[in-house]
Length: 281
Image (cartoon, rainbow, N blue to C red):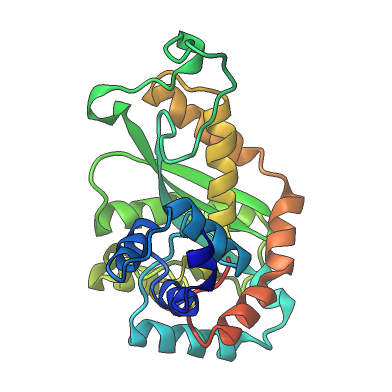
């Protein structure tokens, strides 16, 4: 242990781990062994911890190319001074896949020893995933809009049908002004020639959007909320999952939507601060 405390390679180790965050404690242990320094991996973790380096589950963020970064920064700078009314008059949209048993959400159970396989302590799994539902949803500062279940393969024609049946009714229900703008991401189905022509024909003005930017769409927070409450209701089958999604989406408080849009400027500031890179949103 004393040998470890006085070993001159400690700072080098810290620099190496800082440079390569995915390094495991076993790797420097082997490196130290090569110079005849024996140290337990737990000691390495403690030493790194004393220097402010702690093991954490990495956050998942879209991979950004230089082009993506440039577009994100340009978008943020362009809209940084837009009036709040502009964002309040935007209809935010997105699609999301929601699994029946919610395996994408971390779960924990409080149980006694030797009770791991009791039914109440299990999360059910079904062959081939047990099913899921793909939904399209929208919202504005005034509240949630419509939620549509997507049946079958999603293509440009299906997407246009969803827009036709749900956008204007949502705009009407949410009392958006005549100058409202439709936000959508750059999924190929959204930007295809036929969809672009359909949007133009139906006089739907869209917000120019930077690719790989879910952190700029506040609807992501509502998807998180939706999954949490739907899975808490423990839907038994896909039919229940679909119904619960519709029920809970309609229950989203308008105040929640308003707060998300009221703070939208902070997202733009975060993108500018990150020079177009990933943000904490």
